[in-house]
Image 1 (cartoon, rainbow over the protein chains, first blue to last red):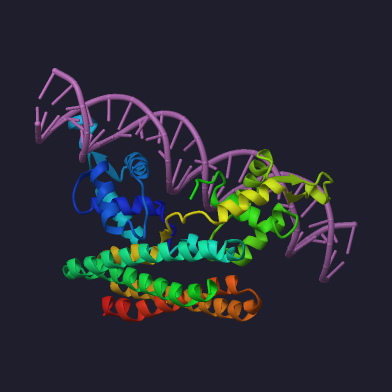
Image 2 (cartoon, helix red, strand yellow; image 1 turned 30 degrees about the horizontal axis):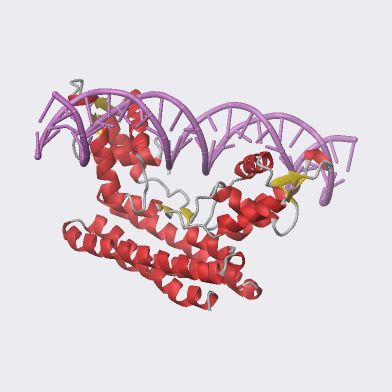
Length: 173
Length: 173
DNA sequence: GGCGACATGTAATTAGTTACATGATTAT
DNA sequence: ATAATCATGTAACTAATTACATGTCGCC
């Protein structure tokens, strides 16, 4: 679609602010909690984007500073318009950075015992994440969109675990 | 494990140089071709890391500059040691940046027709990637480690396509 | 009223992308 | 021999992470 001016982080911030004014801190924790698993954003990025969005007139900071400079940002009408445009954009490419595959790719250089241990530890991490996603799935009965993302997570973890159990197992004998 | 000094990009570069001397350009294309799908590295990063690795004595540039400053880098014994250490490291966290999930998460704000189109287009991209991975799987019969990574790709694409066909379909009616 | 935990934001550093410059090669 | 394409590297810019500074609150 038409190229949007905001980047994905800014778009995300606008999306959360569309639900009501929030401070940078609150935004950052809300984002991490809800989409952090498939869209990582750090606190510093949120603050940076808030400043730049304010410069562009897409959010305003409600002047009255609270304790330790805490300030709430509110989305402007222009911000809402921009969010609508951004959220319907063409998808950018997926960024995948999967350390376990890097290690596997170079696996011939890893002592097999050690490789087995790495895969085993990774399997545990995946199992934990799977449990979290399953929990989220149950919580999110009221929001089909968020729920669908949890189900992606479930499917992903199950796929990766199965991969370790078949391909990984074959590699480490 | 013991914290390694090299980062993942540098480690990757060392890993490729372990197979023989190469120029930055060749490294970059080899990396992109083989692991680019799950470990993105740009040309500029490769050049930067080569300089820093040279500074650390882990690679040397074989002085004679070829056409347009092309220069081949060779891994040093210290570089090999460092690679061995790095490749057996504990896994860092996976970085996932999955635009289709971001769009889905905010899906209530996207016109359903448009959302359906976005998911449909994404499905096609996944189908193409799946075909590539299948092809790679066939080519890589001689390298079980690389082959295992291709099979991860196959499983991933199939999972994502199935997700679109079930969860995605449910969302757009 | 000092101490530890949490809240809040900023600054410094590193990583990653995009845009650019120019030298070779190939095709017309 | 000119244009088009590919090879090769660098520089400029943007994004992302880590480290830091300071403020507030509850508690013993």
